[in-house]
Length: 179
Image (tube, rainbow, N blue to C red; front, side, top):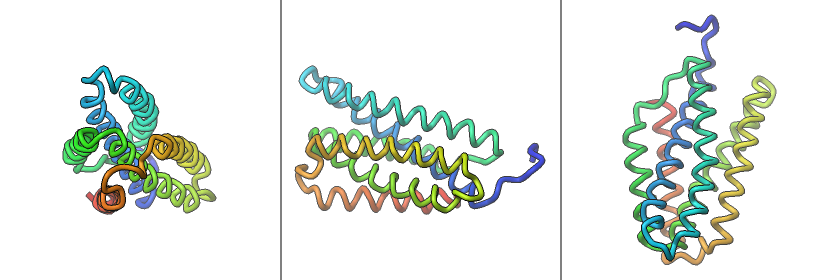
């Protein structure tokens, strides 16, 4: 390795997962925008999604930088997460605005909890990184709140859709930690 000090393996897992998660979030929003941006009637929704995508892109850019600085490899699953995220975005958007919001609510609920537990885990040994996780968690909470206000819980099949998406996120986290 080019760095004098090797990144702690647990921190490397966190960075790899968080990078992949932000990559996936950007892909989801791109998929949703592809549907909503094509219809003038859903321009407001597309604009809202663009704002959230821009915040996720800032997070992704920060993790891109952290991976390089700490000599941590990204997940080998990136191409799969890109396709899965974009597909999830398209499918939930085709189901309607409330389903797209349900997708955001489910994803952001998992991610904000994930960032919260990571921040607590490393607060004493990596206070700057813990602060970054806490800051990003606040953005994710904001996205979740927008989704709830937009009717996420009124989406057709909300319970099933939400459980499916949350489980998918948790599975992606476990896979990405190692691969």
